[in-house]
Image 1: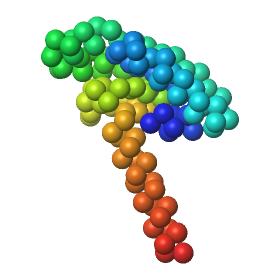
Image 2: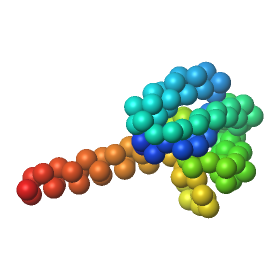
Image 3: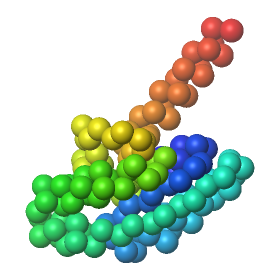
Image 4: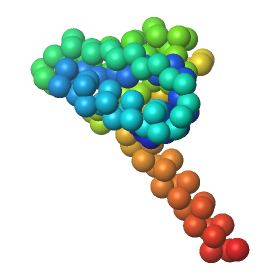
Length: 125
């Protein structure tokens, strides 16, 4: 997902719920953006309240807080990256008008499918 976001560049919101994830996720995303050579801006958001709800096993509240943040900011960004796997359910079924929302499971699936398509082409050539 970080690689996909980096390749696309543009204005990227990086959402985390755990403060300890912010810096390493930011640096990884920045690396992929720089490798792509495209212009980019990364704006990190730490949703501490959502993390606190997850710690209390209030996962629906956790997910709703993340969904609300995505919908609040999505008009200002090209992409929104959910930095933690625990955030993926928040994006399930969520429709945005502008920003592409990237999550670990969805990005992994897309990467695998792209690789399968490449290999089919090379095997058939």
